[in-house]
Amino acid sequence: MRLLITSDLHYNHRKSRQLAEELIARVNQTGGDVLVVIGDTAVGDGDSLEQCLELFRFAGPKLFIAGNHELWTEGPDSHDLFTQALPIRIRRLGWTWLEDSPAVFDKIAIIGSIGWYDYSFAQASLGIPRRFYEAKVSPGAAERFESLAHLLERSDDVSPHAREIIARWNDGRFIKLHRSDEQFLAERLDTLRQHLESVRHIPQVIVAVHHLPFAELLPPPRTAQWDFAKAYLGSRQIGDLLLEFPNITHAFCGHSHFPAAAQIRHIRAINTGCGYRHKTVHTLDLPD
Image (tube, rainbow, N blue to C red; front, side, top):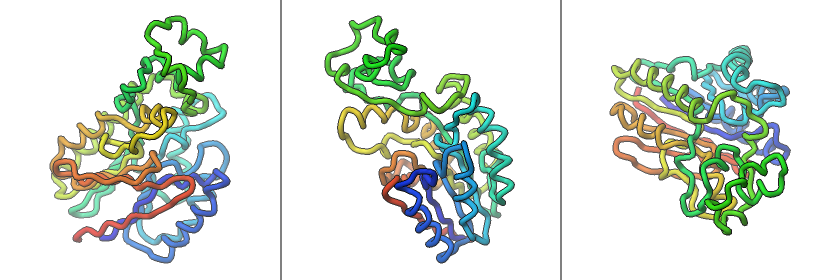
């Protein structure tokens, strides 16, 4: 069985669309047995998501996982978009919404999840208190918005260095989950555990999760602004859960736009590295 795995096509983004179309053309020409797209195909609003997925001419099963960008909306409820509207839209296009249940092929199972974040990848060296991560804005940026002034009412725990960091995470503007990030992650982990338990009898399991499950897949240190964003790249809890299941051989993710790979005990963990200016498709050949 040949799996083709990609992510982060960002089809609604002007600088990304042509590269996404070129990658899709390669996939259509190369072919394979199963296609897995691991999130951030396009934002939830509008029809960019449909425009992108309709370009695939793939004969085998097409498995879809949402990323955080699919939850971006000008509407009032990203959680409803994720649990109700998106699954219907994806199925209408002939794709499998992999959050519902594992895809099982005899001795192989593929499990998917959006994952999420809980700030466990936040960089302690930045000295940014947790409340800023919850608000998805750095101290330096909070100083520039009157609506965020309450974050600075207590200033004794904010270092001068942290005040120089100016960054925002746009999920805070465009995603409305009506629950905390930790609560949403807990929901996703509960579902992921149920799916993993249901395939304990399957010899080989491949997991595809949009957010990073292991710190080993994080991008290397860059500027403080970039390092601020690491808090939103994934969660250690995802990786801890995966390591409980010895039949998981591979874990793929995207989201960070940085290619990385690591052997973590029995799991080969791979970040696709797809981003706005670079696209790739990974091939994984598995014994039938």
